[in-house]
Amino acid sequence: MNELVSCVVPSFNRAHLLKEAIESILCQTHPDWELIIVDDRSTDHTAGMVAGYAQKDPRIKYYLNKEKGVSSARNYGVEMARGEYIAFLDDDDLSLPHRFESQLKAIQKSGSRFLVSGYQVCRRSTGQIVDEIKLELKQICAGFPSRWMIKKELFQISGGFDQNAAPLEDIELSVRISAHETFALHDDIVSVIFFTENSASMALDKMIAARKILLERAKNIFSAQEAAWWEFTVATDYYSLGKKNEAKEYLMKAAKGDSRGVYGLAYSYFKLSKGLNGPFKRLNLKILKFLREFKTPALVNHQVVSNDLNG
Image (cartoon, rainbow, N blue to C red; front, top):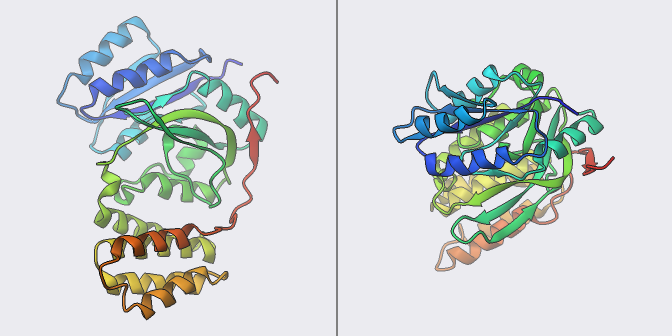
């Protein structure tokens, strides 16, 4: 097996973390790879650090982003890629040594052009594994590109990442990909994603805007149940910000799309408690989030591909 894997890493002012990401690629058991690092116009010593690695290993390549932003950096990296297969890696994540070998076997076994594997969530300060996540996706879309493997042709015909959909640009792209290919779920842990409490995803106002963009763009792709899940999530975020009227609006939308009646129960609870007023906001949020995830049905029949490095 000598298929070339092009690993695309966007980076901005994280030379100290990028070094670990590079080392994780150098340890891959599959030797036929190229590492494409797209510098999003960093002001630290990223360029010099990468140059040192590139001098030792010509498979490592450095490009300065032509534009600005993580989406354009990823897109530019794919444009420069020579491989048929693209593996993304964020500059603060790691690929486990068997990643490329395992994913190549799985993507070829599945016949799919888009593979979504499992990952570990760790605390960087301690190395503690917080969670191991695989085969959890029940919907049409998938986030965390550091666990993807996708054929370059599929990425290109899908249109690439869109910065306007940030911070859900990965999920938004996966929805557009789904118009061409239903992804395969890979039963293997291949990447390490580090838990960051102060990540950009915690900015709820930006997250709400991104969720609403996703709902608008996917209105002809999502099933009613999947749209209801996202609407319920918007409602929960609005409630977190104290915007009860907006929360009520999206709870009502979610209730209409949920044939199980679970979100209708949440909407009734919201109305009976007069917008969940009172001193129990934290408890109410826990209840809403519990109901959001309560026995969510499998909405898409994703093919599951078992790990098989020996066969």
